[in-house]
Amino acid sequence: MNDSKVVLVTGASSGFGALTVRALARGGHTVYAGMRALGTRNAQAAADLAAHAAEHGVDLRAVELDVARQDSADAAVARVIEEQGRLDTLVHNAGHMMLGPAEAFTPEQLAAVYDTNVLGTQRVNRAALPHLRRQGQGHLVWIGSSSTRGGCPPFLAPYFAAKAAMDALAVSYAAELIRFGVDTTIVVPGAFTSGTNHFAHAGSPADTDRAAAYDACYKPLMDDVNLRLAGLIPPDADASEVADAVVRAVELPAGRRPFRVHVDPSRDGSEVVSAVADRIRAEFFHRVGLADLLTPASSLQAAPFRGNRRAGRVAAGGSVDN
Image (cartoon, rainbow, N blue to C red; front, side, top):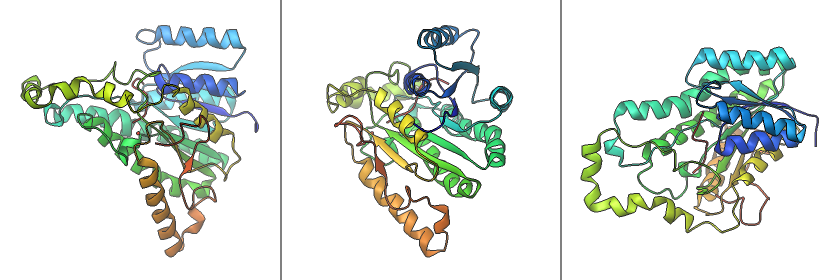
């Protein structure tokens, strides 16, 4: 392993976030687990985190972080800098899933999902990036979703749309930060139906009348989306492989970190589409004389994670709690 990193992870109270902070801490890194409402809603999650740190002798700390508030993002990053003198890696994991007919969600509901999944990353970036740029080094890790390019099921439109926007933002940031020594990795989880609370915590449409209108044709399908996805996933698939992919990327030397890593046991095709899209981006940068905005590890193709033999392939990720 390389030198220990100081890492801040958003949405760390459950799901991929909770798995990731523990995996990073096991690797010897100093990890700040960002959660909102530490004194109320996530008090138990924070207590569990402290107990885990004490039991395993790792440097793992809960920090108040609500990605929906700029002052909260600023305060969380300021605490990390004050205590550690630096921040090496920022993991954008906070997100929220919505399940139901697209038409039945109000514009305000879509805006709320976008606010968490997309604007939340912008708030934390604005808090953290001045420090990373001054350091001349750093690493942004974005927990994306294979739904942005793979075979995504219906009735998850608000979540999928927000994840697609986040992916586009991450791609732009990658080129704009590389000259400051800040690397980018987009980890692309598939539809893990166990080990996270994606479906259990999913939001529902506010317009119940319009949602009911879809029941006649689609009710059985909506009720078993999770089961249909589960049928594609091998029994040995483990959501912790997403956390392992994050650790592996974090521990690689600067400039050798992969631009995109797929971890999807269901193999929904996202890795294939992403490889083409990322290659086209790289070729375009070469054509317009911007090849220096591409690291050697990201210049030609997406990089599959070589963990479990069934993982490292491709479908819908992110934590449901921030």
